[in-house]
Length: 104
Image (cartoon, rainbow, N blue to C red; front, side, top):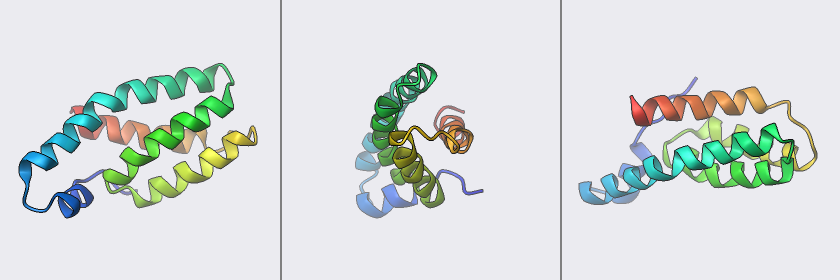
């Protein structure tokens, strides 16, 4: 399975390390709260709101170079709007990989 990386951020930031770091700082600041909100909404079976949380998290998944993760998240977002939860464990794996990458 793919691992988070900075290649996309480096591609859009070029040689501007300060810009790269500022993007990463924003991701590190926003990710825990967005993941927490997703988990809360999913646990309370508010799947429409959970889908909105997935939508927000997709941007971070994309910025961290997780192409397959983005595909899974996009499918999961659509499924949640239909009340389908089969991709939940796959999505949690993606969130866990991002968490480990950002904070360890």
